[in-house]
Length: 585
Image (cartoon, rainbow, N blue to C red; front, side, top):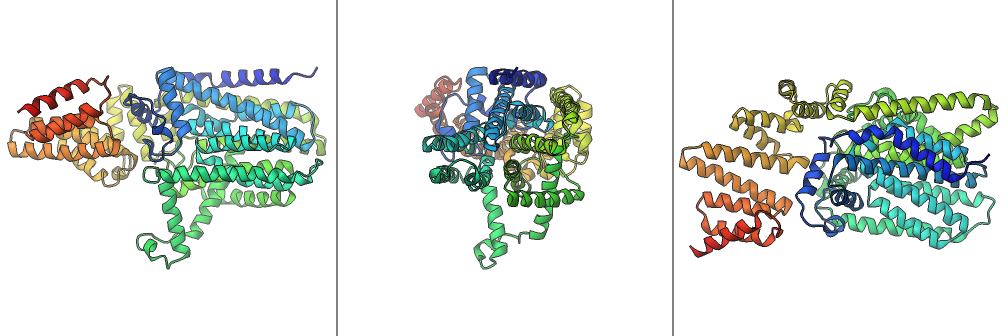
């Protein structure tokens, strides 16, 4: 009896929810999750402008992603379990979309039945490499982008089958939404060009108007880059990419004196070696993902060999122009976006498993259909049931075990440090987890032995330990040094400096020294206000000016706070009262 599509979908939903059920009990991750949750908690009003306007309040232009986090606030109250549930449901939706895309692909290649699409969806659902994107709330960017990329390709195939410009335009809209979730979605376009060139060889009558779909996609790209470039001053992604492009351009054309004056030559030979090594590593991870690691800080040089093999195989697929090969190529194109992270150092590790989430969806389809072709040619049908059972059982076991590791930051970072023992940021996160579990002595020992303090997040923890031990000058010295290259921690550093310096000023008996400390606090508070545009800092500035007896400045700051603070803020009324009282004297 042939199962209906609805039953396949229900079974896929059941598998996904059962396997990722442990994720529901995971906390916020100390890396990034707490940061954006704190940002959301400190924002009192809902504003689409803060998400979609170029140069908004986020350091990456991914408005649809940040919008979902704000919806988490209003629907689920930023509860960890709810935010994890959203990630699980997005992954479940993507599993269904892989199934539907694979069904479209069966028509494209002239196959019958839903078994192969179902197996492809199960492989994607259970693939252990996907656990990082699903378990890490900040990894939602990959989940959401995958949703729109998969919807785009399903609609793209529908447009080709129906020869419909309307469906082509709708598919391009879905792709544009993918851009607004993560820039990785852009890398599907080379694969679409290959499909368009391959399409005329199908048994259907050639549809010349199909190239209008490419026009729609290019228009979506143009609109996206217009918006993204408008966020240049605040977007770390495009800023760092622009620096990389400038470095490459300066190396190719040394006569660009304005660039070469401050830009070192780009090491092309070393870059080729790194590309081959990293590509080989990611390709190997898709076939054999274990051991899983949240902080992959280095890759062995022997991965250059699989990288070379990968390049040769991809070129072979381009020449053959087989349907399965196109899906392998799309997986490779999407995966190549991860190479930008290696060269721009945008993330806490240059290599990460979550970057393979979207490529894994196309890889799963390509592997299942490619294996089916091979089995048919070699007449190996009897070997399929035991192999598929072993593959899916082992994948489910690895995925569930990894989800359990993610249930606690302590177990996650213990596992991470075990696998990357020389990676200081992972040790720093382990120390944070130990502090949370009350294991202060162990955490202090880890922080004390972390090297590269000036370049790592651990500097904040070391400063915090000194602060706790009343070693104010030592803590301030570390933070001021770290402030020279703060990265995404500038606000955290400034806040700590203000608090430490405030404590020092309260304990200082010498009036001249006290004024010096308060003046330093003013400089840092003004910088925080300039970076965050949070009116609460006007209130804090007013308080410090009062301590310095700068009454006119205090009145001005309290007045700005009263005007700009939300009416329901607990500081709004006190700020207005203080501004009014100071204006009378």
